[in-house]
Length: 191
Image 1 (spheres, rainbow, N blue to C red):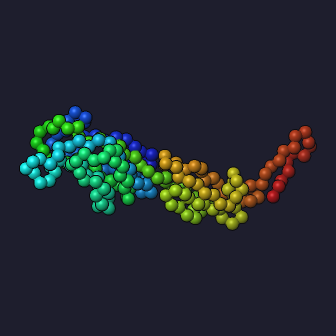
Image 2 (cartoon, one colour):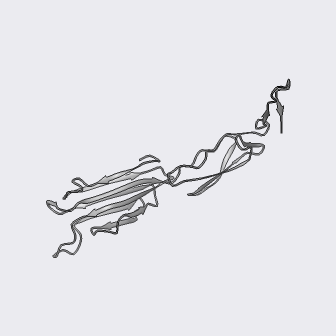
Image 3 (cartoon, rainbow, N blue to C red):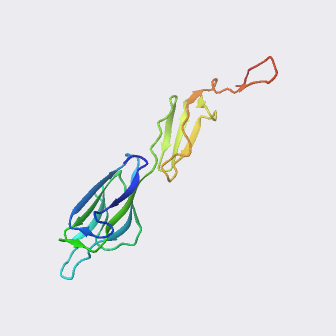
């Protein structure tokens, strides 16, 4: 998966039936991102009358070992799970023999969070959390578009920043050129 990845996963035979088998999927995103798994449909064989545990179940496990979900029952859908790490393992284990007139599992996955843009030359990253990144230009340098030393950018839900991190240029080069129309003087420098 890339930084803008999303898609659907379904068990073989979905939505008509599922068969006794084990399906595993590993969802990996950029280390700065997390994985959102949305269970759209879970229809597996329930615990039988002479059984004390599930034979067929779906498990969503974070890379750190945390079980985000393990169930054979129909859950309140859609159920959204968000990983703590950048890797999630999804397993549908069906130990029942034969095909069952249950639908199986359908889920949607999406990478969430923005990947940190690199700092500009003559600048640096001051602070970064899930929602915002704060950049600064070095002393006597400013961002070329705003002529300011500081810039904050925000991460939107679609994994995109609201703005870019432009070049940091020396204050002299950020001076505005003013052209006078109809005059023999063509350029005026303001500091």
